[in-house]
Amino acid sequence: MKLFVKIAALWVLSISAACADRGSVADAPIVPLEKSGVAEEAYSATETATAMVNLNGRSRVDLSGKWRYIVDPSRLGILKAGRQRGFPKDRGPTNHPLIEYEWDTSPTMDVPGDWNSQVRELNMYEGMVWFRRKVSADPQPGKRYFLHFEASNYDTRVFLNGDLLGRHIGGFTPFEFEVTDKLKAGENSLVVSVDSEHSAKTIPAEDFDWQNYGGITRPVSLIEVPETFIHSYWVRLGKAGHIEVDVKLDGPNRAGSMVDISIPSLGVTVQAKTDAQGQAQASFPTPEGLKLWEPATPTLYDVKVASNQDSIGDRIGFRTIEVRGPKIYLNNKPLTLYGISIHEEALGEIPTRRMDEAAARALLGEALDLGSNFVRLAHYPHSEIMPRLADEMGLLVWSEIPVYWDIDFESEKTLHEAQTMINEMIARDKNRASIIVWSVANETPIKDVRTVFLRKLIDNVRAQDSTRLVSSAMDKSAKKDGQAENLIVANDPLGEFVDIISLNRYDGWYGPLTPAEIYKVQWETIYDKPIILSEFGAGALHGYRADPLTRWSEDYQALMYEEFIEMTKRIPNYAGMSPWILKDFRSHRRFHGRFQAGWNRKGVIDQTGKRKLAFDVLQNYYNEQDSREPLKP
Image 1 (cartoon, rainbow, N blue to C red):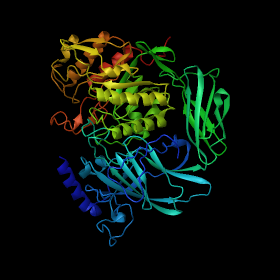
Image 2 (cartoon, rainbow, N blue to C red; image 1 turned 60 degrees about the vertical axis):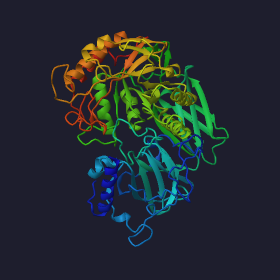
Image 3 (cartoon, one colour; image 1 turned 45 degrees about the vertical axis):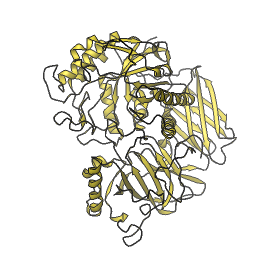
Image 4 (cartoon, helix red, strand yellow; image 1 turned 90 degrees about the horizontal axis):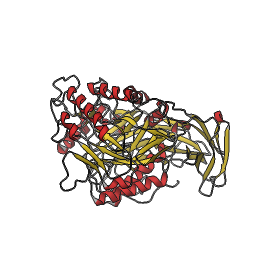
């Protein structure tokens, strides 16, 4: 298949000119590269700054629109020997090297967006594509400028006016490069290479069950900030009942600066002074009249953070989340999670990774119509639009990184990249009240090296954020000699280190049982912790009706949901569910010609939003549970 894709891509490259348009601070994760060359496998443990938070609160130029592109399946733009070659530069048809390309006559596609949905010939392409956009600028003295990418998938190199700014690995989290000293007055050439191909050492690795959408999939912005600016902040309700604040300044005057934090509607203003690294902390008692955020009443407050040179506003909710023994507590009240899993793929006949506010509202709106109080955003950090809307709409959120199935758990490089993904995910979204669970993995095999790997990720999460729960979607229990096939024992060794035991179960779909035999499944656990069904489900083609024991029918899927709902009564420490999945989504490992044709059909709605029988089953169950009612002590 890969050979076919490469040949097809070469054909696209050869005709591309004739085609019609289709359209410096701590913690972080960008892998820097030397200007003199780009090593194909470049990797450095040296960390630079994570991206600044809250783009909507900053002065920025949105670079969305039509970008030129060149398909480069042989990676000629960058030689494997590490020498730059050609594509980053603006060259005419007679300039050497690589006279075979010219930016100004190359076709265009939309950024943000993925190439798979925009260019028919690239539907299954995995490899390198180059993008170019001209950027007009008028840099001002006393200002700093950053190129900020909300995400691109997967391996990205960024050049400005032919100079390499750096490289980022990972497909779903933000990164940025400072260009203050590189941005010219007038026209600038921004060139970006994106390589979507995965390997045994990437995250995820080569086998995963969703469309590998390549491209600059989320917006790109040119950001202007003062010389010393507010890089990040974290405002939350701490476990001791105080509101706690962390602020970080970046710039020459970051040390010894006063920072004001105010919540005007509550009459609160506090001050803190930054240390030598530009960091400041503050803590103050919960203001009288503070309304806590929860699904039934998702109250958000305007919060302002200001320094001598900069100020930024956000809307933030305040709540607590914790586990006590077998139960989850939100704001000190017992919580059961009634949810649904969601992939980042917009509704429509032509699926796309591009997620604007309307597309996000459509997906989360379906979750609300189900009666959900919870969404599992699988299997990677979704666009920032999703948790921000969840804050507004009152949906609790599980957010995870794409450590998926079996990856190279013995590789320090892979571990570093996983930790980087966690750092970027938490840094971006830690002010979102809706997020209650950070997940480090999905369905990883039970073996010692994997448990050691994931425990390091869990420790990393806890070191950064002790206010949320940590979990990992687990696949199988460790079987004991003589254990009955229909007995599920929650005994994965990873369970010792997480807050919630989360299990994916497909009894009745994979394995010998039919939906009508799910009653035979029994549960035990060795952990005094909450258990949630993080996945269950069955494939069903919308409109195909048959006997309830006929696979691929809506009736079969609906019966599965009925039986799993009944099963929850037999699960010890049961604390909720997030069935798989809201909508049918693209996956090239789904080969069934009649029922799948490249789609995973486990959605309770189809790709356009048409509801299946299972939607009604789940909706009725959630409504009976009053899942959206105010929580009671």
